[in-house]
Image (cartoon, rainbow, N blue to C red; front, side):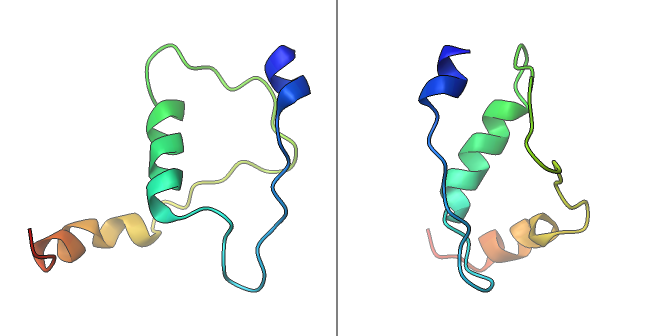
Length: 66
């Protein structure tokens, strides 16, 4: 309850621009998918598209200089 009480609300982005960047989103998803984490409450719908941009990760990393 303390976490919910101190949580921040992030206003939706404009058009197709989200408020979080890809790195921040990946960090959050890694945490949510880690052992011992349990999602207790969601306001709205929780969705993570199966055929989203994640499928292109390998292609992007192959063409990204070290």
